[in-house]
Length: 211
Image (cartoon, rainbow, N blue to C red):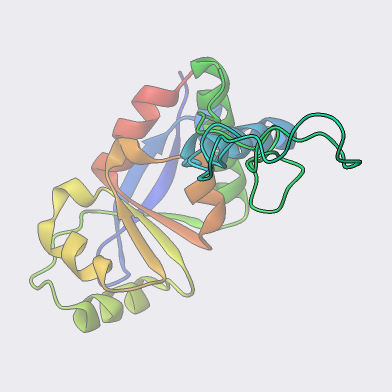
């Protein structure tokens, strides 16, 4: 497959070479926005806890005694104080714990990821650094490094497995999220203003999602 060069920066924000990327992954001619939406919808559905629960007639507290005889009182018949018609009674057709996950083909997920990566690159929100080898885990020092790279706003940093210091430094910054090379998903890509890959991370991801 033909490739195209993309600049690689060092942590001082200066170009330190290039990396060969596949246009089939990062330069799609048409962006399938519906597929991206479907991938985000699946991600959020899968993440739902699904723990909502109400008590039905058999689960609420209360006596099972019949409150009055069936006939002769002039009042409506009633069998239990736990009836859904009564205050503090059971809930009819209430929610129960369930999984909101549904089938979403692997090929579709990878295609959506290619579309999201192409969208980020086209908008100038994707950059590559040589590595994440920083000397300290201090958050303030790492913020200075990101400033040198021109990273403003929220950022997704990919390749966290290559540097424990970077992972620790990013953990205290609410605008920054550090993930492993193959932990990239469409939702996180779209959620952050910029995405910064290490060179090894972007090559590893490219190898997995290429068509």
